[in-house]
Image 1: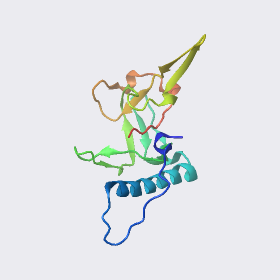
Image 2: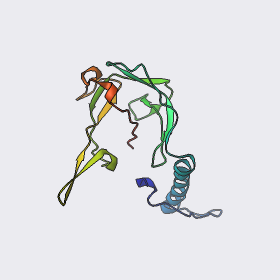
Image 3: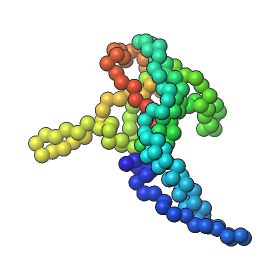
Image 4: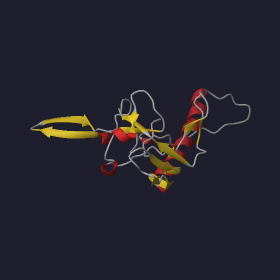
Length: 163
C-alpha cells in the first residue's frame, strides 16, 4: 500500500451552530474526505493508466506523449502538466508533450523500493538504485539531448509522479 494510505482517518467531527472550530477539527475533517477520495480512486477505479498517455513519433531525437489520466498507488491523479507562471501554478491544457532531453533520475526523497535492485551475496543483502533517466521537454541543468541516450527501442517509458 502507498505511503499516503498507510494511516487513514476513519471518522470526523460534526459541527453545531456558532461552534468555534480548532485547527485539529478542521484538518481532521479534510483528512477524512481526502483519504476517502484517494481510496475511491485507488481501490475502486484501480491504479495505472486510465486513458491517454500514448507514445507517438518516437525517434532518436524526441518522444511525444499524449495527454492522459492515471491513478498512482497513493490515489493521486496523474496528468501531463506544464508551468503557466513562476508561482508554481500549472496547466493540463496541452494535447501532448514533446520530450527532447534527458538527465539521470535520482530518487532522493521517496526512496521508492521498486527503483532499487536487491542483491544477495552470501548472507549480506544490499540495495542498489536502478539506472533510470528522466525525460524533459527542454534543456536544463545536467540534461543532455535525447539522441545521445541511444537505442530507445530497448527502453521502457514509466510515468512517475513526485509530490
